[in-house]
Length: 285
Image (cartoon, rainbow, N blue to C red):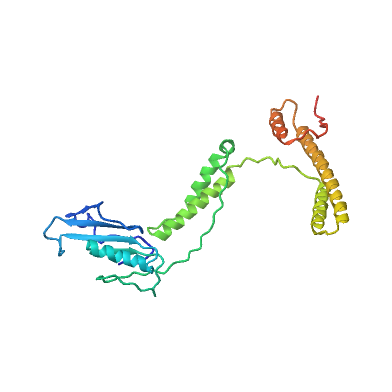
């Protein structure tokens, strides 16, 4: 018998006993709880076994304390004349006892270990054009020279601790060289900068909405609702003006004929609204 949270292994294999040939029998009945059996037939007279046929059963019990499961297993062992039972049970505690007819139980109990796992957040895969930019702009001569110089100070001794330390230092050296000599492409901040006046209007609107939710007087509710609608209208207009100002500032930084103009307008066409006023551009010649 075997009781642990790992899958048990057979007591011998073909490499240990080449004369043992494993034969599968599909006609053996299998109960519903994942029980199966295998037979090993010996072709040699010199094997140290009383019989030339050993029947082994493996059972992933998942609840051996259930009497119905014990009864089912006992019936199968009696009907098939099983010699060895390998029992895998995750929920069996050391103080739990169970018995099988005509079997000696050898248990191997292992306490459940609680392991603290560190969650690693995933990052987005860098875009190809960012990698190409870093490859072209990197100073590869200094990158190689820096690593070669640091490798001179890494000493490796023929033991596992020294090898692990050397690998850690080597990885740290590569990361340090990357951060020092391989530049990253600066991402353009495309978020809209909201003015302080608009932020104050949003804060006041939210405060009145919370007050409206707690209000019980119908007359006061109507007044507060009217104020919220007025603030919403004012906030929308201010955001339109802020977006128009942001767009104008971006266009004013471009030189006439710059190919970046179409990229910016493509982005802004998807984000803008017809209510935005006339753009103010002073770089036209």
